[in-house]
Length: 87
Image (cartoon, rainbow, N blue to C red):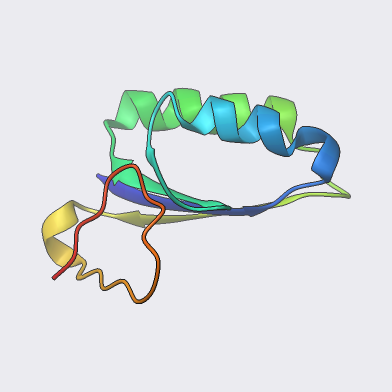
């Protein structure tokens, strides 16, 4: 599956969330990660995020797609991604 993770995290935990997500996905924006991931990796990633996030302070949204062939990604402006798929 292909996932896009976006987050708005309290500054005290941003670096921890960022470092954690780098284990599974590519950073494409300051608060956006994406990439292909297995169901097992997804379950571990989500569980790990839940252990970092504080429910009443932070927000994490995960968009799940069956695979990267169903999404078209376009970028405008400076590219800060570690991995970028420009169509």
